[in-house]
Length: 97
Image (cartoon, rainbow, N blue to C red; front, side, top):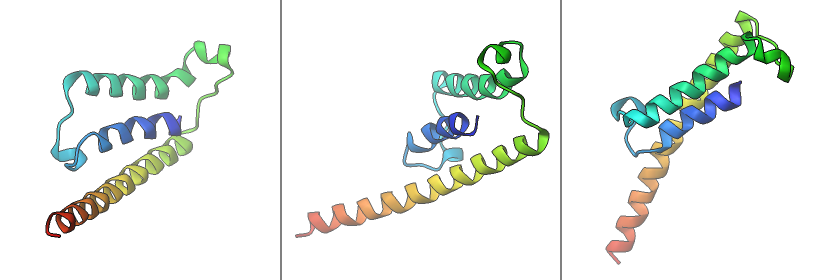
């Protein structure tokens, strides 16, 4: 559950140089991402879960997953900012040679 949700969030993070909450994704990407996250979160609590052997997580584990995804998203934003600053510096150094 955590890996699918965090991967979906990372797609939103890396799609643009801007911070996640300062750049709205296009409608289709947002719908797809929310659908994936929603399905992933709900699926263990449905009858289909028995077919695949899924079990629902306790509220404490769901909270932990939420915190992990939040921290992972923040870390990705920080790394993205550092990356683009470094790329900008390297590009400007090449230009002035």
